Image (cartoon, rainbow, N blue to C red; front, side, top):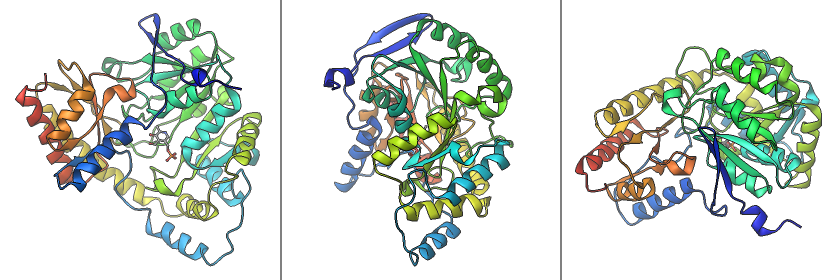
Length: 407
Ligand SMILES: Cc1ncc(COP(=O)(O)O)c(C=O)c1O
């Protein structure tokens, strides 16, 4: 049986050619939820707090999706297969073919309770104690905890703003040479919290490295793929390097694209043996995600798509407004994210980003410390909130930094 000490394994950091081991706390309430909870408690007490913590679109699901769900209530909603309803698997395949020119057979698709559960299922199915998972930082805070819960070790590769928070081929190659037990690399683009996207050329260069390490699978977390600020949507590794498809697991879902976070529908497409293993974990766990939600997801994927472009235009306006306010502060360096809905400003001279986040809470704005994403010295601000609150929240932040009392 796995001991609790196995689960609370240390995190390995890999930076500039050196791999170091750092003790890490056991998985607990995520720092994002902790800050959001602080903000909610203060609000309940009557304080004026602008909450920029949560990665949740502030829109509702498109109307045609809600209509489809309402009419599905008149049907009998029994169990669905563990790998999802066939029309949903068909809709996922159809959409990937339309948007990415990627073709998958029916038995190459698994459906679960959100992208999060699909990723967890994939790790549960493949990781054993001692295995390593390579995670570029900044990273979505859940990845290292999921890896550790499976008894494996996260190996963190810290990227820099100079590289646009993208993993370089040189860094990847050096890391894979040292992390000899690496069995997964996670590529999340657009990234949470960086918003970074890889071009075809950049993916091609990473693919060239990956070809030299045939034992490493790649988990492409494309959950933010439809939220981007360039005209053309981002591409994905499987489209750029089809020869690597037998070891790529492409993960996506309806949460961000269609503002359907609470519906809990996510999926993965990949090699048959891995998909079979993921489905087996799924069927022995919660059987399937809600049949009602799956019907809504079918409507989302097959129905009109214009809400995505309309909402991207709104996100873009918010991003630009927030950047303007933040860049007016001499203590802040911040890149314009190319996708997703987060800003990751670096705060000059910061000693403790968690203490700063608490100070900012006192000043009426809730943000997440960058250390939650492997980026100490930074803060994460979500712009999935209305323009006026966002601008006001950013002003509160810059005003507080201007006070200097936090240093
Ligand atoms: C990078 C990333 N992947 C996956 C997820 C989980 O998405 P889902 O709601 O489909 O579980 C999130 C949610 O915030 C995320 O930021």
